[in-house]
Image (cartoon, rainbow, N blue to C red; front, side, top):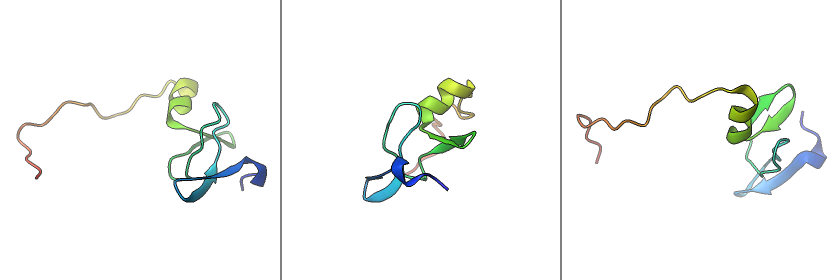
Length: 64
């Protein structure tokens, strides 16, 4: 359970504040590392993890 002093309202939802940079997040946007809530940018910086997807377009897939 997150400490209530580390909560804030953002985008109309209650959520944690990033322990790395102070960004307001929803619980759906947050990642946890050793009991701390962090944003995606801090998660990547702390863990060295990279997204498993690429940003290449797929010309054969048409979505309208």
